[in-house]
Image 1 (cartoon, rainbow, N blue to C red):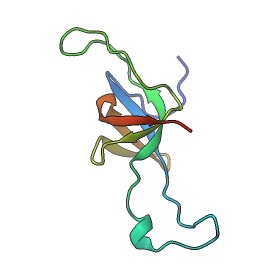
Image 2: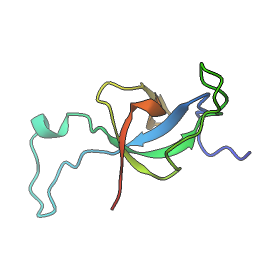
Image 3: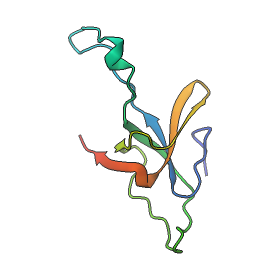
Image 4: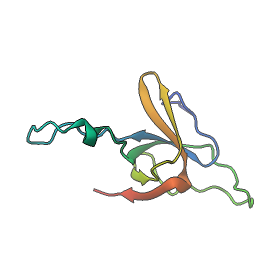
Length: 101
């Protein structure tokens, strides 16, 4: 299996790249820090965990796909900074929904 990212999730965990909040509008207006310093609860699924079985012995089947844009719980997961990149590692159960274009 080819490794794309320096973090390998286990079990039902997924690796997310959090979307960065825009600091400027499309019209060029710079937004104040009070609006831009809040963390965004939206990101892209980069990797799935290793799978396995849940506590009841059922096989873990991921409902998200690599590349899905998702909305997740505000305080979900663990933030990890590796090679100057910000990642979020969280259980798939913390995903609220998949965002479609």
